[in-house]
Length: 191
Image (tube, rainbow, N blue to C red; front, side, top):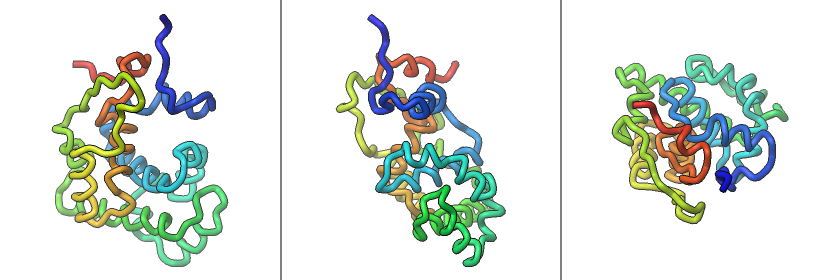
């Protein structure tokens, strides 16, 4: 019997490539984690495929997700971003990326390594689940609840528990590929 990939990605080639090559693979780079957290926040109320299709536009619009540059954005920059058809033109979402950049820099100024901080919610190692069906995959977890609460306290927004859980799945903090999916084994860290 041929292994089947997780059904959530459907047949869209971009979505399938994202599933096969990125989703669930452990990410430890703090800047990449910052970008992904911001992009997951942009998804609120939308499908991930919409954001996935706009990812390169977001990178161009937000200076490659450089928190040092983003933290300096002023109202004129926000107004310019709201005219950019390549991103989701929602003032709250645009401002959330700026707010998140400032929170990121505040953590860094206090000696907090963003990657270690985030990975601390899963003990520094991916949680490897053994899901047999998509119906077994939750929308939140105790770890995403804790991450959400802590990130909000640190000044981040668009980081509810559901967004945090989706983020944790995407960056490999949680392996929620179904066990029969070829990517399940591919996402396991080498010991």
